[in-house]
Image (cartoon, rainbow, N blue to C red; front, side, top):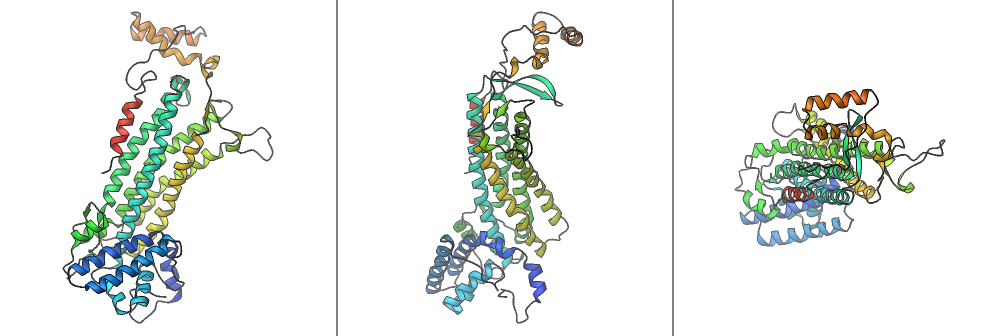
Length: 431
């Protein structure tokens, strides 16, 4: 197998297979970032006199050709090549001979993979940000459209107080604001340049790390070279934590939808084409999409813990265990994209029921309204509470207060959607 570390003695076949694992597949996601990192690195090497202008020119041409093949979907790791770094250097050496071998001066695969992963994660986080914003706008639209449609509120799974579809949709929109703060925090953690930290202890070459930071579009360098290596695992865990925050929001929303679709509730429905049936019960319309969102979000939530367990007993410096982080995080990013997209798609087709509270089932939903009505009429709260409780227990309770008047900030009569939109605009402005 072609490796960058080979010094004349090849690893045994089973060792290669065990240690390389799934890297050859996952590294294809990093291919364009490896080229970008190499372009920045050779530009810097030229500036400090380790590459001539002509060498820089031919290396850039060759790297740009590799980048073109990646964009065209024609790039692949050859069967005997260990990873993306080895493949790129192999192609350069085949084309340019000795010049291709100079590209690795002043860096290690350790800082190479860190650069690749951090650039990859930045792009992934930006994509998730866009998907979260799309879902946020959909939830706010539904909140405004259905703001006057009442809905039973529940605590402990029991009928509690009046809510509304406007309040329900709007609640999940605002929850996404908090998720966006988490997402931005993760972005700031990964938006730092490790290139030049090499194997974790820098280099005797006069590397210009500020230059590569600018060229690669990072906000700042990882200053301490050991700290740069310590960011492996920490970066992934921060991203997993942010994804977990979004997943928790989606998980709860999906659970609500599963419950609300049940005929015993019947609060919402979706076209038959978006539900599934039973092989034995002709009447069934199952919420499979929402159940899968719920389940996949549980897997996303588990990711942070798996990463922390992988990294928690490593001394500083690089260890091969870190390679497994890609196996854990990369599939979870795909799950996150899938869940966000399908949630928006489903909400494009949601139908809400507008006569829910006409049912006598929800008579007790208004006990607090009645207590408050009596308090406003001068009855002390504890006396009003006791009176209404007795009436409920004796089967005599009836609410005759008429329309609801909830006007305080964040209530069903004052959803504050404009204010929440301003919060999201601020939370999602990462520049």
